[in-house]
Length: 128
Image 1 (cartoon, helix red, strand yellow):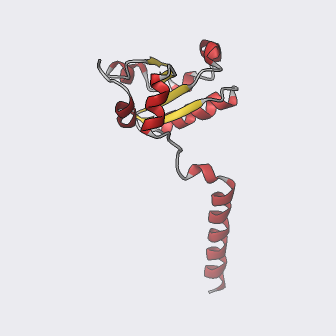
Image 2 (cartoon, one colour; image 1 turned 180 degrees about the horizontal axis):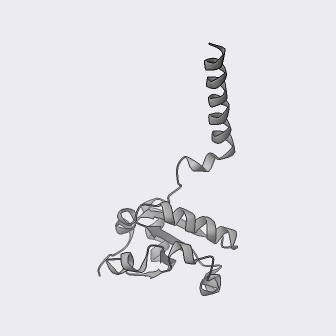
């Protein structure tokens, strides 16, 4: 009986530790469609962080393609946009969340995570 209680207590301890130490693991923070649309209309740099193959299958009209795992290797490519609003999106929002964090670590401050393609399609023209 003591082993079960001890194990249960250990599990609760670990679960609470993860919850309080890593609170950002729970949900990604996506910008609303209205906020993204206003940023697009104001000339924000739109970055599709999917693979080149995914990008070629359809993307926002304004978007450039910089795969999320190449941002850290090529920060100079985006350097001229350091003070400009930047919108990132991918297929589901996972890679765009990583891209947003990477850009923030490189000193970029005005970054919106639009989430996935379906959210970005509501704010921009695809296939126009």
